[in-house]
Image (cartoon, rainbow, N blue to C red; front, side, top):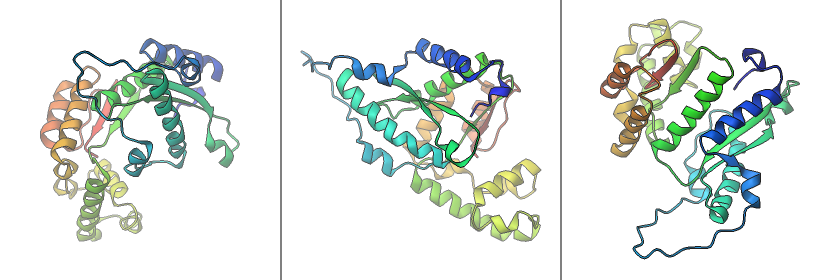
Length: 258
């Protein structure tokens, strides 16, 4: 989320114009404009390569974990993007929409969505991160923080969070009274707080990398490699080895393994 007062832009329209220009530079096109393009005819190749199946919206949605309620609206937009892909072949799509959060507050806001359709690989996630970072840099935001979690799928995430809760309950007496009530409901949030406070028990806490499958770990490592130009390569290498929280240089901080 960008607050207009934190940028060098005078108004929302100016910020959006800059953000859209940057997205278009990286190959994104408007979802609305893509929908107006003529439908592509299917072409049969002489030496066809194996076609990678694009998962259905239902398959994707079943494995999603939403950090905020606002993110649920992205599912319907993703379905529209998938439909546009079938019609036009465009894989990099974006759109503007009013934020649903305005219903719960009086602060007006606008959402700019960017979607990479048809790819579940780390390169898609890296592209979105690179574009978001470029938009933030152009807006004049000097301190930019990238938080990456290596928790993986819903199953591996649940196992990790469960073991974090068990571990914290073993050390409940050493946890501050203000954090103790949250151990049952938000063990991961409590762990992050303890790490930031330098709690002596955190180095022995379960590490998220240990809970990833081979495919999940490979995807996470690939993402780190794609981002090596953005962050300190030594910290990236250390994160691959340990899977624990690391902080890179001040220009772009990557919190890895939280």
